[in-house]
Amino acid sequence: MADDKGPFSKPSNLTKWQGCKQFLWNSDTKECLGRTGMSWLKITVFYIIFYSCLAAFWTVMLIIFYQTLSSSEPRWQLDSSRIGSSPGLGFRPRPPEDNIDSTLIWFNADDQETIKHWVENLEEFLQPYKSQRNVSSCSIDQGPGDDKTCYFSVDKISDKCSISSSYGYPARTPCVLIKLNRIYNWVPEPYQNASDLPSGIPEDIKMIYSPDYVWISCVGENAADKDNIGDVEYLPQQGISVKFFPFKNQKEYLSPFVFVRFKDIAKNVLVNIECKAWAKNIKYDRGDRLGSVHFELLVD
Image (tube, rainbow, N blue to C red; front, side):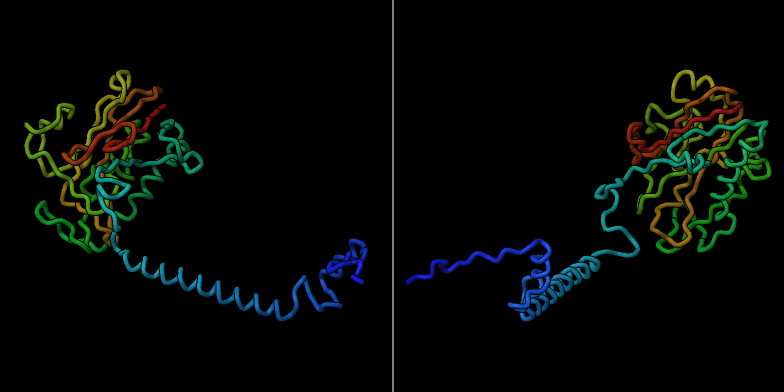
């Protein structure tokens, strides 16, 4: 007579606690967590081999990948890179870190505390220029080379924009430093003569134009700003010499710059200022800030 229970039998009635204890260790089948000792050994060996092979595969792939990279230069450069081949501009001093997204330079010339940050920020940026290393003598025909940098003389900058005058801030004639952002292996392509200059370039640049410089101009952004910005002075000159390029990640490289001194900017008025760089291969786009930089000045 066949077994009434058939091939499958109903498990014994266990409480939840008894079932949990049996799952952790079943003394009848000698199983721990549902597996025998041999089963645990096999699966442990399998996963050790599996993850070892996986780690070895990715290690080999990383080694091959890093063999294609250079420690001294980016693989993708200029137009083939995300940065592109048209540098933007940067300015100093920058606002405090707790307001890093701001582009406003505000101070009260009668309050030393409002001046202190701007002067210290400029002095901190300029400190490396006072003890330059790994430099060589450069000329228009001979740039910095692959492992040397060109000496940038800060001694030629007038005292009007120096620590001795607190960069003009107490006198309400603030100096703002303008520099080209670095792009690896980028070389400026100047306009060869004044007749090639674009229509939008300021007249003061046309009068002194030379193809040996990337020229810088700073103007008020809007009609009211143009009235309020007053006279602007560029120190040590209005352009950045092409001899400082290209940047090739040279050790101790320091970016050349121009100081823009606002001689009689309107007081107690927010002035929007846009500075541009002028060269054939510098594209201008206000939206993407290509070839330009924007900041505001408020002098009380």
